Length: 274
Image (tube, rainbow, N blue to C red; front, side, top):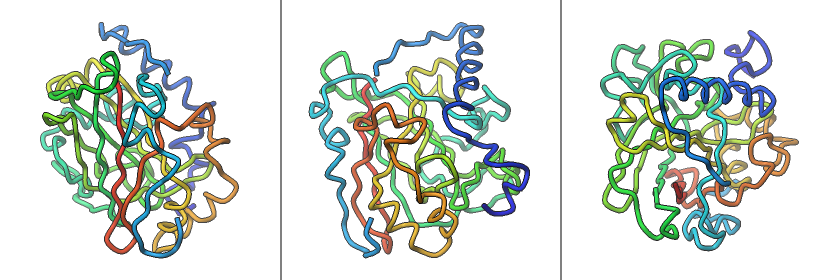
């Protein structure tokens, strides 16, 4: 990859074998803090509108049955205070545009193909038909070069591509971002945590669900054919959702539905039953 990762092969995320101990530590921290852990169940190169036919759950949760979003590791660099930096308690983290750093950071901006992320949080216990207004979602992901703000070499003074939103009366949150790059060993993805309220999120306490959103391959191929994503082309080759250490046990309920194109940007949508 680029110079940001000269310290070793993908220290920021080395797949399931590395992430599981991190998740275990996160769970222990939550237990010690008195947090309640909820048992969980489970592109062409053309610029044109794209919809993923393999992701019916993104727009219709009943298509895959109503079950809570699969629990996944938050990865080594969540930035929620469980493993180093805590961005959630910083003023300005509640925002819809996460492309820029904020507060006392270096003030950089993440470049890449525009991406709008829309997550709809619904109540699994009621059959996924009832939205969850007043909940909160924290999202974060790597930049175009595959680096994570706050942690990766070269961007430790940045906190871009991280933000919190409160769900509206339809259970939705929307973030303006950029399409993440692909680093070696992991399928392109976005991390997110769901909290019971905005107060819980900004206090970095009482996480109810931790999961990841995956992208369809055709969209990844289209984005990575654009300027600035050269390393992602190489890193994506040889990878598949079926072999990814996180998504290999099933990704139907985590695969985003996509619309848009490389010129004007994409929109990724996913229903998140909790």
